[in-house]
Length: 97
Image (cartoon, rainbow, N blue to C red):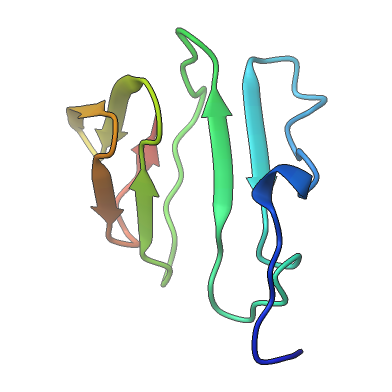
């Protein structure tokens, strides 16, 4: 692993391509040779609703809305999100979009 890596997120394999839903998920951790930092790109189609939520034991996450708007479920709370909002989520919080 070098001291830096450059990777275009749109060149990372779409891991949701065969999911059958209007979702794009590009998980770049391996592509940028990272041990601890995960960088991902998600594109949700209009009206997309995640069928499940997830949480982590240790990993805190931040999400940035680049376009459009939507809602997130953070534990039992529904929050409205708009373009350029940043959401920081503690590891134990169950999140879904």
